Image (cartoon, rainbow, N blue to C red; front, side):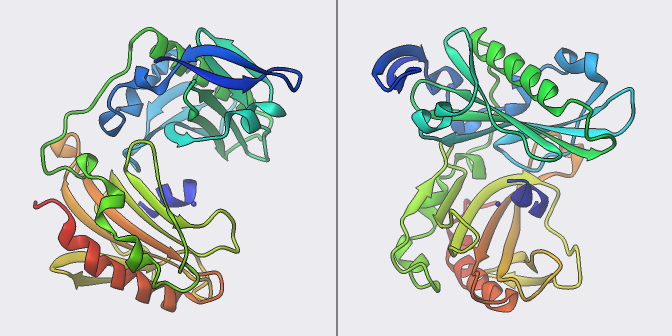
Length: 315
């Protein structure tokens, strides 16, 4: 689940700038075309066959409720990872001002500037919500064509939305997916964390993630994520398994350096998806304190978990 953290840390009208500085009204497709964002199945947005010309495509393990991972093995060798989903509220004018934009029906696909071993595309809805399609090189030749794959994946996902091919998951009433993450942690408690006395909460469009602070590596933050994947476990020497508010909890200083103030507290919930997969829903609290160490960050993560875990749905 920490992997998911690091990977990350319809019709409507909106006003967007044109090529010049004069605003214009552009009709397009809003995020309402996706239906209930809390139950959206991002894995259904991309048909693997659309990318088979680039190599063999397979589904990867679940690491999030909000995006789906695919692995692509080009014939030339190596391994690419494609992530589809991850809805975010964006400033449409800023996103489109310096980036190439092409239209797929009533949606816009924005080409973000690539960085070494990574290329991303954004599917922009008319109400200011964007969906990400990201491709990362896990191994092999950096010249494999990440942006070509990202562009094809984004176009395929956009076409699925326009064709009404959006799929949704069915969750039981006590699922974390149906829980408002921001409603689990009062902001006044977060204000007790060092550097976050005036932080305001920011909710993700689907409601699975709530963040206070952040925005840069110099700004403290607290993030509560309701996600899914393998059950929480000890991954390194800094991790400990303990009982917090009656729940089995894994507390772990993230990264290789305990001097860095980054810590996660995770607890498992009910089974997720195919019962034979062994995957579960997971609640994860992450505390980042740039001026402190991992031990201090974990103290806050434990304290916040004491308040959040009792508010989770009953198993």
